[in-house]
Amino acid sequence: MPSYISRIWNARYFWVHLALADLRSRWRRSFLGVAWCIIQPLGLTLLITLVFSKLFNTNITTYAPYILSGIIIWECLSANIVGGSLSFVQADAYIKQCNHPLAIYTLRNVIGSGIIMMLASISLYAWILVVMPENLSWSWLATLTIYPVLAMIVWPVATLLSYLSTRFRDIPHALGLVMQSLWFVSPVYFEDKMFRNGGLHVLVDYNPIYHILQIFRAPLLHGEWPTAENYLFAISTGLILTAATILVGSKCERRVIFYL
Image (cartoon, rainbow, N blue to C red; front, top):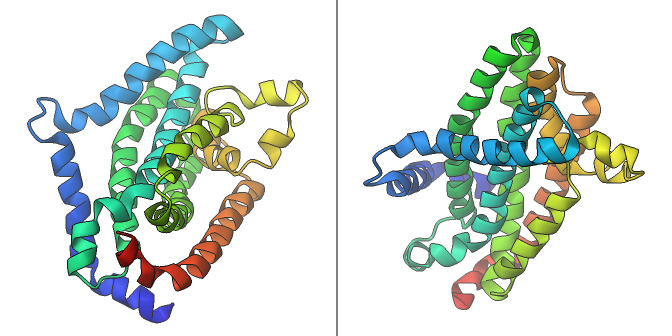
């Protein structure tokens, strides 16, 4: 592993260039360009909030940032899990020509989605400052920890799924169904109290997605520091996924070229 990590670091100019090239391609010839990172989640938040606030009889002022924070985190997770699973397939030209560690191709996706998440978060910070300024506190510094915590989770899971998807091409299609299922059993748009009041507290207390969301939501929506339990679940999930990825990668990395 030290040698593998060293090779990733030595190729840093390559994968940074790929990540930035993806972003440039994403907004090429777009009139609004980067602004879409803010407009898109805000528009979706407005639509969902107007519908769900009536259904659940909730306050729009506090429910809208709850929805927006869920969209921001969920989009990052989906981009890396569903989109990241195709990283090796999409980078087959580079893989066939360059002897770089394959993990850089999923890292490329992690960096791009992380930058998009940072830009999308601007609207959430602005909303809280204007509508709920009483939540402004030193606990906001904890929101910065969401980026390394998310990277610790999505990089290994994207790499693991890329190894599997290169061999079994049905996996990316099945992931759409899996992510849809996770959406229903996670407090992304539905408030966590709905799960607890409905006797489904297990879907919250032992759900890593909930704890990831809390690291981001607790400081912004409640002015509180995330709990040690939130970090424990999130980091433990990352370590387990990393161990699984190392195990699979050690056996499959040299075979990927043949599957491509």
